[in-house]
Length: 63
Image (cartoon, rainbow, N blue to C red; front, side, top):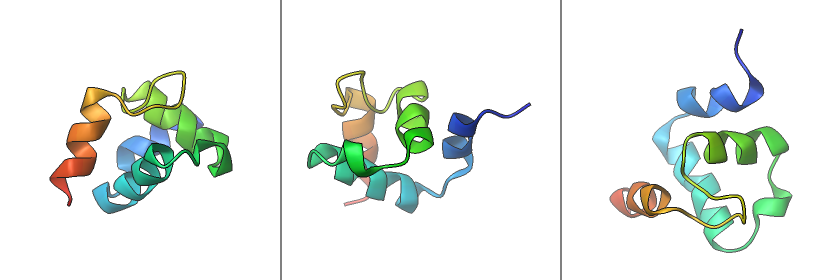
């Protein structure tokens, strides 16, 4: 059974990077909980709502 956070795995890269950019600018609290949980589960942000190295690489690969 899929968890809500698993939906991030099926999200288009452009959408995921949009969310990562919002987190990078300090707007994680405005995102749906399942998005934040998914980004954490996939190692893109940490538990302090900061981008991880993996998150930075993903975001910079689309710029």
